[in-house]
Image 1: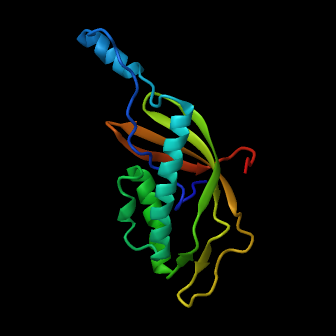
Image 2: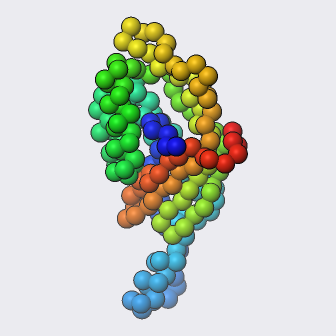
Image 3: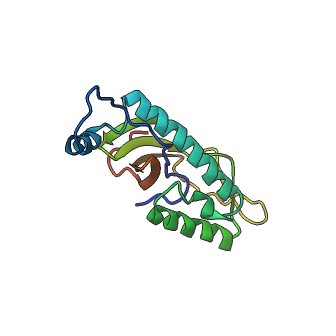
Length: 176
């Protein structure tokens, strides 16, 4: 099950660590560049994810408050596929005259796995302080909606640019 809006995560550009005291040959340079870690530490990876996810939620919340208008604001923050999925949800908001009141938040951010150009994270998304409102301002939030969702997301970093490649509700035991 994909979680449509409000759960994707962009990462800000990360400077790769690593210096060499020798002048490597071209072949060694290419291999060394491929072996450099995406982040210099777990703390750096978590800090980057936390800042980027907070930024993404601000943009997503604003689109939702605007009734789904101008979802293009997500471009550059998420992959093409995730943008299309989110845009479909925002289109539904527009068609049904739905706006969102309140703000989403997150906690319990943990690193899943880090590879050379991507990282996955686990996070608890909290939508408990948001309400879906119809055109008359009446709360139409589904009764019994889960307020905290366990999310796993992947971020791909290329050429100092980061995009959220995927974002899904975790299918295992709820860790939130």
